[in-house]
Length: 411
Image 1 (spheres, rainbow, N blue to C red):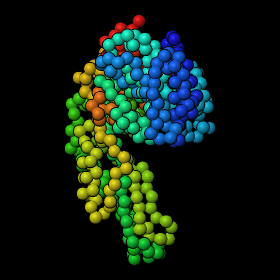
Image 2: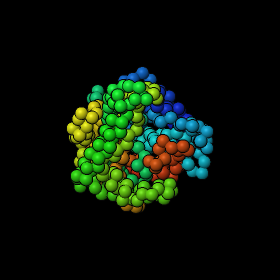
Image 3: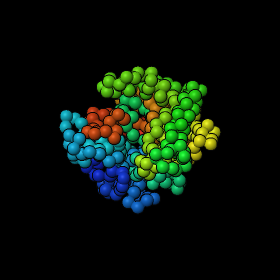
Image 4: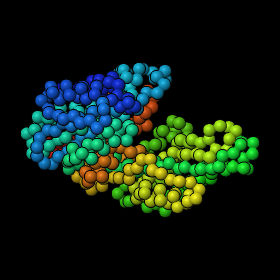
């Protein structure tokens, strides 16, 4: 089983359509099961929603225990005519593997799977243990995946590595919180030719949005970022420089840094009115906000509720608090040292602007890092790919992290 095996596994996984919705993962699980069976590794399958299977394999029974996690579902490919190659072809061209999920995150899943297979024998003989987790449902919140596994007390360990696409030379230590919120405004219906006789819920929403935006802007001027993640945010901002140039955006790296330190404000969906010649009596807005470390979603919602009292109603949609793993944690130090050792270059620290399954593990006290091949900017894009070089380097680094954390030496 040489290093080219990770390339084959990545291509094979891409060929298995696991787009979410519907998020069925049985095909991926069957593929992983065959490889585990071939290597004599035992596993269990858990299902919290029909056809959304999760797989857990454990090697060894000692301590410390390291968890490796990757999600199997991918987002839909969108307009397939905009793809150079079939989005589920797993085609390898010019040292790139193309297809939906190549970066997010069939490449990362392949990396931790192959690392598990290649190190299984020496882990079995060691004093530590490794838990491999292939989870479902991450792309729609992880409720039938990692959240279900954690809620049912099925995962325990001393640290975790999630192979989301950090980039093979970066280690991600945290993520912004998720504060998705619904805002409702009401009105009084009347004929559209005489709106003065009614009250327009859409115009009330316009007022509510402006107040909400002003409130968040004011809040952002007071947020204090914890020292542990300040440097990671600066490093993350620099990774956006090439994207800014490529897309010719009229923003700077400093603007990116400011955004990562702030509560983001994105009105994503708005619905209101039923007919053009009627004054609408109802309007709703789905507002996506991401909170930085040092800022709690509950506080943000309460602030908006107070400011919009008498104008609009506020309801939660989905919530997860910002979370991070200290640079002083053993898993973080080992990951950073492994990148430097294998690549012979100083690693970059990173923080995620979006949510990952890491939130569920950190919530139960498991120090968790994100490390995997691919570039986050390629996730969910047309013509998504992962580089072969990145896969091979990430595999080497991942294996070093495992052996260092479990205090064993690979052969």
